Image 1 (tube, one colour):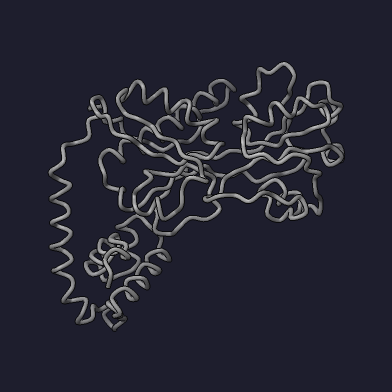
Image 2: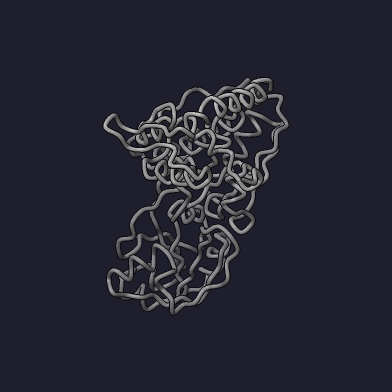
Length: 335
């Protein structure tokens, strides 16, 4: 076995599996799903060319190879833990650590400005390096080269940890002088020309084809369920573009609501609810198991969730609505 080709996270998983002797309990301990744990067990069996755990009347029983491996793996992990325990605790006030965060354009427009402001207060020496989805692969994340990804994921490796940052709906931007501003019906929506904007997937994109509406995302999928199709005139991957393009009276931009609200003070534009139902989506933060217990990484995840919670609370306060249900996060560890 070539160790350079082996995901060393598998040793952590195997250690827990051999201790719990139960796939479901091991998954709960590691904070991943049961199907993800089953998939990991399959990878372990392939890597060691041994069943490792077999079903018996008493549950899952380790094979002879697994019994031999268990103390050696435990010793290896203990040695690695000692290496990490020798590091000083993360001190945000004095840290100059670089966090590399893959953030889709949506997250950069809505979450990142507030995060950067919070960072200047909580840890002014920390450096934030934001990458685009085209810059990063899941392999980069798995190896810990990228601290985390903040995106609207349609798929993600099951072994990754993830948490919902918030949920969002969709709104439309139209020119104030457009007839659409007063009569924003489904018929008028479909008669208009549209701006498509999105870049959520990982890896390099290769352009869009208006004829392939099935792969255009949430909005076009929602229209497809109605047997409808919009006329897309412009494709873009940047949320800064629609506000400029929508100043043309015959164009409509359908965007996540938090992005559309950024144009609330623009005198030339108005925000309208879509004339059909589009399911809400989740902005998620995902990271590799390799970084899950790192003190600095835990602190950054906590700060991101605190920032998102404050944005939600400020929105609800401005709208005069009841406070939303948000996660009960512990106080930030400031030093």
